Amino acid sequence: MQADKLLVNFSQIFCPNDLGHPLRGAEMDEAQIIEHGYIAIKEDKILEVAAGEPSASLIGKATEIVDYSGKLATPGLIDCHTHLVYGGSRENEFSQKLNGVPYLDILAAGGGILSTVRSTRSATFEELYQKSEHLLNEMIVHGVTTVEAKSGYGLNWETEERQLKVARQLNEDHDIELVSTFMGAHAIPEEYKDRSDDFIELVIDEMLSKVKAENLAEFCDIFCERNVFTAEQSYRLLSAAKELGFKLRIHADEIASIGGSKVAADLHAVSAEHLMVIKDEDIDLLSEANVIGNLLPGTTFSLMEDTFAPAKKMIEKGMAITLTTDSNPGSCPTANLQFIMQLGCFQMKLTPIQVFNAVTINAAYSVARNEKVGSLDVGKQADIAIFDAANIDFPMYFFATNLVSQVYKAGKLVVNERQRLE
Ligand code: NIG
Ligand code: FE
Image (cartoon, rainbow, N blue to C red; front, side, top):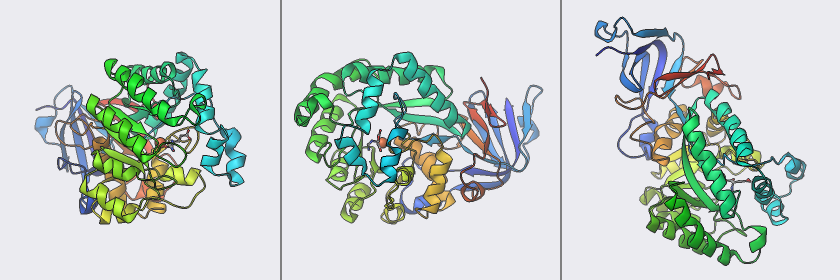
């Protein structure tokens, strides 16, 4: 069959294995790495990926051939945990952070997430849309083609709905595909101070069914943390969400270990997030229950802490992990997934193969888009990131610089020479 596009002469092509489940344990050490190869695209899909030169049968009169000598190709990167849609920013808390004021103390004093809740409640749909679009534009030039986006800066129906509708509209309008998560239980709103059970009831009884009825989110998430929501409240909310057909995630073991991982394992959540202070026995629980660990080393970095999630140990114990930004205005204000991948190497001592598997095939499973993206298997959507690098080691070693030069989304060139094409 003739290709519409032939991307030729890559120095290296990174092809993760799609084994029908997230790569776990030693599977994360494997991938097909093609030296000097090409990618053939037909319409929006991968037609062929192989070493050497394309055969004549792939080339027709209309075939566009692009020379990518010296470059690396990987599947489009997937950022599987972000708090994309929000109002305002929080640089005003930066000096407190520098002076060592803990994240949860800033929250307890009405700042942190609650400060962003105030800015988000007062922002219009258009304001939220523009701000989120700007972030997506930054993400795509860094090689990201699919993004998970959580609500959770409304904590009331009106604003949660607005956030989710912004994400839905951007999914229509932007080249990046968005996967929505409802996170109405992200903090205890000021009007429910000391009445967190009542707030959980409100989220369960009034918000969940509306999200479902309007089909505004596919996943449900909650912040299970000391002084935020307990493991019991998390279990209650997530089991109600599961009954309604939501897939589950949970922010667990970020600052204090209070049972969130066990909730994830018991309810067979798709993923558990953060896991910086996870206990060894909870790693075993997540591993046995096949819960993906979505790890966020940029959050440890940005909180100026030194406890990173024990990624190596998780892999040794058979878990599947991803790396993701947590992009949000407080604990990780960034749009650069490449830097997070580098932290995976520099701080967690992951190998480049483990890192690229984490942000491609495993992240695709984490957002339930594994049948469509996450690898370069024939028939998958042609989402491709192209790096100014001869191999996968280079973009890990040459840090804090955007090395993505081109991005294809569904077969279409959407970033060229590091610039987004409109
Ligand atoms: O994943 N930990 C809870 N939520 C976010 C932070 C949100 C914020 O600080 O605005 C996180 O780190
Ligand atoms: Fe988060």
